[in-house]
Amino acid sequence: MATIKTLAHFLDQLDESDIHYHLSSVRESSVQVSVTVEDEHWEFEFQADGKVEVQVFVSEGEIEDETGLTRFIEEHVVEGEEEFEDDEEEDDEEEEDDDEA
Image (tube, rainbow, N blue to C red):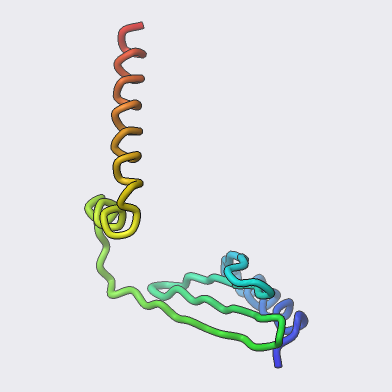
């Protein structure tokens, strides 16, 4: 059964190995440690009841250009795409105003 000591020891091991990590909380009464090494992203979730859940995400090695951004927005942030385009138009207008000054 994992405890806060287990979490602290794990973080110490990451620090000693110069492995960058990010702490967050995605569920009540838990702490998530996210680690990316090489082509893998690991998520360790330390729960208040002592359980630890681990998920590993492995890259297929494909790197996308800005079309990946567009695809993500279309698939997951449909309404945000319009806002993103509006922001670009506002930025273009501001640049034109700056050029005129």
